[in-house]
Length: 489
Image (cartoon, rainbow, N blue to C red; front, side, top):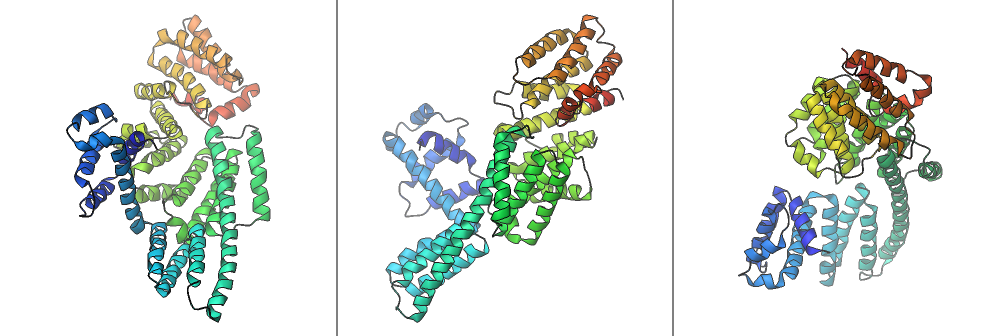
């Protein structure tokens, strides 16, 4: 562990509640060196960026500064200890682990029957919540505890039963892990590529998953969840959006029947299924009562939860844009407080999706100045943009917006730069280059002010059969043909 980086990052992720609980732990009498630890914690908490030189200067008269590295390690571990205490009361896993951690002490004091009673409680919690790793551990500890009890018929029968239970537990654990692994691998490919493009990796994973689904049926609610989730991912990746939508709709109904799935530790089972259902609906497109109800549920369930506010905004923007509800899309963006702060913390693919969708919302609403502002965030984004086509289409949209704004003096350089970029790409972008060529002709003839004629020529271009597949691909990210119509209304 790098104490500097890890400690600073850990402190910055703490909620107000986490900080309060940590400070309460510090107030305990048995806690050693609590004053210096509290001072160090408070100082690092206030820093926007970690600066060790300033920290050393601030604490130069304190003796602990001579052992700063070990002090930071100590503070880091105490924060983890505080978080662990909190988890014991918040999560089922925490409660089970807390029970299991007590068993050695109780057994050492020969309170074996109490150990058995506590283990039965832990086993029930683990079984009810399909926590098979912890269930297996609880069974194993019971085996060890039974060694010290009277070797009667009941004990021997229980030992035989435990052998069967552990074997069954291992089978369910492996089965659950298998479906979870398929889901994670499939999602990793879709997160990177978004749609099917003859990916050999995807074809291989799809084959492996279908073999699992056929020969190793799911043995738990979580495994069933992941099976449906995987089918939904596969349908989506292959562009079968109606099938994907129905698969996730079925999964959401299944979640309602299984409280264990809705009360998972991270509260993401419902969120993940709901967002995939809505994304599929966006590509159909569909805006029925079920989708509207789902959006309302998400707003209510995750109200005030910063971690998921961007995800929900991303879903709303997609739905509103494809259903021509541009004013609603803009209102959703401007209603969300602290959007820039949330974006600064967002994962790259979430950042790109939200910014790109926001750009489209303003573009369709004909607020070109705000559209270009968001577009520049995409074009100047320093990290890799996935899917890559979002960057390609953003370069084209940049030119179109400047035409709308009347900034014709920029068009030649933008067109030339974009064309040079496309020609150096590994993929062939015939449609995009053809669009640039049409714009270039109008620019050379000094006729860019005659936008109606330009858009008519671009409409003819996108109607050619030779470009039908390219137009279809573009539509997945930006409906160019629709824009050519809407912009003249």
